[in-house]
Length: 346
Ligand code: SF4
Image 1 (cartoon, rainbow, N blue to C red):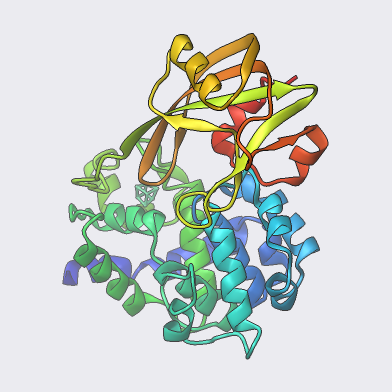
Image 2 (cartoon, rainbow, N blue to C red; image 1 turned 180 degrees about the vertical axis):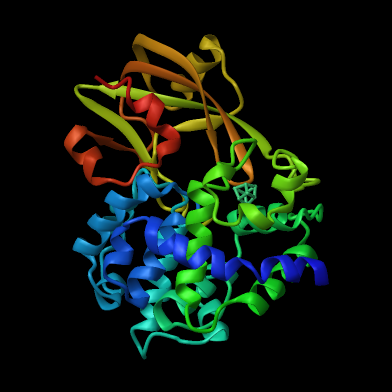
C-alpha cells in the first residue's frame, strides 16, 4: 500500500485547483449547513444529482429546519418523496430529526452514525463539508477513482478493502480543506472518472499520475467481484377502475415500502383466466379488460417482475381497500414501482 499512498498523496494538489474551477453549482452548496448537507446526501444515496435537485428544493421549502422535519406529517413527507424511491430514507430522516432536535446537531462520527440512516459515507460528508473535519466520505465513486489512480485490483465490494481505502483516504486528506477535497472527489467521479469504459481522461486533473491511464486499464478497474445477484420476485398488479376511481390499499407498517399506498397485487404471474378468478375472490365482477402489460422494478436487493392488468370492475372489494379518484390519489404516496401501470389510467 505504500506505493498506493505515494500516488494518492499527489491528489489534493491536483484536485483542489480543478475543483475551484469546475465544481458543480448545486443548491446544497450555495448555502451550507449540517441539515442541508445531511438531507442532500441522503437524497443522493440512490438517486442521480439532476433528479435530486428539484426534490431538494421542494423539501427545503416544506421543511426548512430540523424541527420542521421532526414535527411534519409523515404522509406529507412521503408524498414529497414520491418518485425518489427508497422511502426508508425519508422515514429515517424524520426519525433522526426527532432525535437531533433535542440537542445541537451532532458533530462526531460516533454520534452521527448512531442516527437512523446515517452510515460511514454520509457521516464523512456532513463532518467534512459542514464542520470542516478531516473525515473521508468513501463511496463507490471514490473507490473507482482510487482504484484507477493507483491501478489497484483489490475487490471494492470486499468490506476489508473498503475499510483500507477509507484509512488511506483519511491519511491523505488536506487538513485545511476536507470538505472541498471530498466534494472534489465526488465531482471527479461524477463528471470525469465515469463508470464503465467512459472516463474522460484528457480532462482529468490527475491524469499525469494515474496508473489505469498509463496502463490502459480504465475498463478493467475497479474490480467488483462476487456482487450478489438480486433476488427476483414475480407479482401480478391490478389497476381496478370503477366510476373514475381506482382501488388502493395500504402496505404494512414495516418492511419494503412500509405504509405506502399500492394497487392490489398478488404473488406470481397470473394469466387472464387466473386474473379473472382473483377478481372473483375479491368479490369483484370484471366489466371490461382494458389492458395487460409486463414491467419491471429494481430495488437494491430485489427485482420485481410485474404483470399488470387494467380492468373496469363492479363491486367494493375487501374492506380495507380505498377507492380513490385522481385528486385523492395525488395526495397519497404511491411508490414508483407501480408507475407504469398508473400511466394507463387515462
Ligand atoms: S486519468 Fe482517467 S482513469 Fe485516471 S482518474 Fe483520471 S479519469 Fe479516471
